[in-house]
Image (cartoon, rainbow, N blue to C red; front, side, top):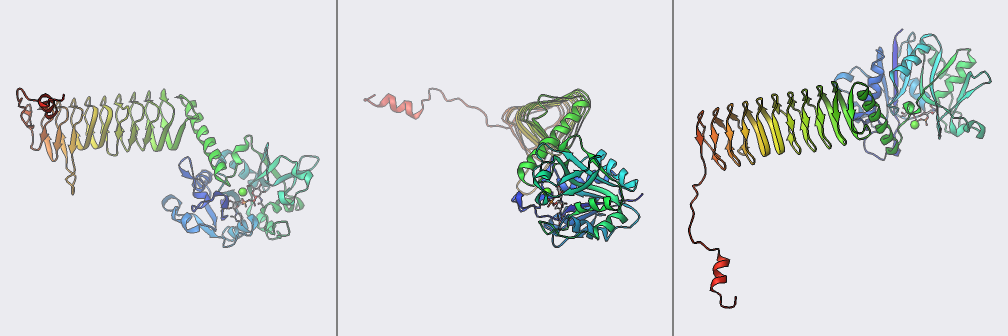
Length: 463
Ligand code: UD1
Ligand code: CA
């Protein structure tokens, strides 16, 4: 049966105290609304319908590309969850199923939603509930002596006795669309808050003799809503732990699964080791046996088998082949492309630079816009002068070349294979293969020379 998903996100979210609409605050690097939408999409619905009000423009701006088929329903005034769903229903065919989600409940799982949709598919009303240790001000589920659900009562309308109930309404529900439409047409705002309550459909279903099935989630965190930044941080930690647990099950070891942040997708082959305080951003892929040291940040990069990244290294937009060693304290910037067994040591920065197998820059260097062959040694303090203030220029270094310490390589420049640049050289013209380039002032020694201070000391009678 055709499934339509309605996601409610019109509310202001004033407790976030933010200029950014609540549902655009990221959880694990992705706006929470997009997380809910991605989860919904895995049910292969006919269409997603987003009910928006506050911050509608900012939210719409984030819905290009993969979300462009989303139907936006504007709710100018937030008259309640029942009203929000009702106006979305204007866009839905009668013969399908409607699933209602909240844009600020980002941890809901596909499994739970599939369960909920199956109930609606069988012609009944499915609602997702949870038993909470602290049910706070959430809506309470009322059950009769046979444990059947009879109604939902909002906290503000509840009696003391009803407030003592620990089973709460997550807000997520699914039903045949024609029934939902029928029930919502009867909902009135005659309650403490003067709102149209979506939750009133439960009692109306019971009244119509339609079965209401509660899906009680095992883990109350799954239906946790985000209303303020404290809850945002809780949801973040829960999701981070979920991701780390999943990777551990796939064969990754974490020094501490509570001290890693994955803001995107991290995929790992077996036997990777990830130390503490590591951050992964975007799409990061680690082949087998990769070892990541502490305080490392890796964004949108691919690391080959057995690569070792030592402490405090930052890698972005790089492709690193097997058995390279990077860091500690290295900065590998976008367009860095390393062949196997390249070694980059402390305080080395690379950008748009290719390095052939076995090449090394072990300490203190800048390599930008360079194509470096195999088995090249770049000495400490060497710099490619790639920028003349207007344009960027290329440096090409052939296989087996040796660039001595503190070389200044003024691009555009070709340094031939197996050539040798003497330490401290400023190289401005191309170097032929197997030649020595010496580009520095010649040393001269002046005999019997004294510093001005020493001269003064020797001539002054007081001292
Ligand atoms: C609602 C439920 C309550 C449940 C709780 C779970 C009702 C009447 N109550 O509470 O039983 O325990 O969610 O979080 O449904 N929204 C709109 N338009 C509106 C009103 C709300 O889009 O006119 C959206 C909000 O942006 C939010 C969601 O609906 O994403 C829930 O609204 P909120 O006000 O937080 O929930 P409550 O009504 O307090
Ligand atoms: Ca809420």
